[in-house]
Image 1 (cartoon, rainbow, N blue to C red):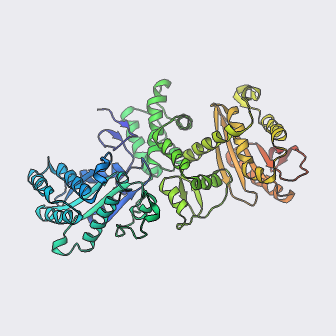
Image 2 (tube, rainbow, N blue to C red):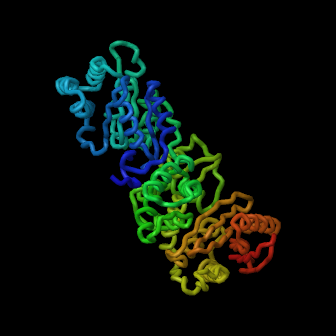
Image 3 (cartoon, rainbow, N blue to C red):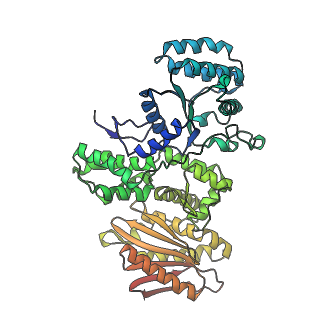
Length: 520
């Protein structure tokens, strides 16, 4: 059977092209062998289910362990109505897991179910089960978020916690290891409770070990997947170069890496009629991905829509280029990291460039709705060879701001000026290009926009006016940035909060680079 790039559910090595998961698996297996209780808490489509599948496959072949794999997704809400209902459901799921593996154990569990009237009875049956098994049982539960906002589930975790603490006493023998998988960390379930004000600060499962395995993929871990595909499909590519470019846009987010490869292999390659991947193909795949709707993007935007504090924090990072230290005690930061929106390298950053662009598009679209009619100006700014007349675009924006926002106060420009420009730019690009933001933290709070339009690139630096000295330093930085991108022409859009601003423009040569500047 021909393999494919998979973006839904569990990945199987014999069916799917997979990145190198071996190092991550060894670290996770070591936790299981060490008897740890832990949760693989990572964002949606981050490889959690695949990791559980790998563990189940390996442990099934082991002479020491026997895996018991359950899935809490789709469980009827009636099973969450009481401790008795949940305990019976859990025992029933285990009985089903053993039905085709060990009929004697399945029969024992079926008979024991009549004794289950609370968590205490379930605890006793778990101990009896462990004595009957000839191998060490390892409990694997996927999609625990489906139950994590119900009190019986927390009581269930509390029972497991008590058994774990007393596991060396004969009457409390229990699972050798428990591995849960979900978005939320069990130790922070107070964020998920329906009545969070009633949540206890001491988790019912505070014995859980920290899961520190890096689940995102590095370029060397992406390369084996590309190599296997290239050999199987007779496709030529510079594998290290393509892997690095995929990582550049995705920061190794598993779903995004596989999705880009899937777009190139299944959507772009057949149309081209050639078996060759290039860096330009990755760029095109990014554009196609940013235009589509999928459950991953839906979840990303939903998390912002449902939490205004998170939205405002993300806005400050993306639109204002604000330097925000990573504070592990800040609940909103923790939520953003839990959902895969943030990553931290001393200060908060959006996890990957694709998410940053998608969120930027979403915030821009929200702003466009509230703006005076901008119109579609694309045809007025096109030059030969699919180039953009960027000076004309900036001058048109200056005119737009003068007509629409002259009476706005400084705080409005401070907060919304950049977003207004990005919203103004969107209909001009009109699906033929896109812009990526590169935040440069400095005294000017610069925000560099890299615009790609067909095969052309333009650097637009957005900054606030802080006086001539800061302006001169900004020109130095822009010249260096243009050099980094191999461009000779750059653009400067300055938001000037002075009451007597003159709506200026200037063309200067600085550091060997041509810079066109406009004040608004």
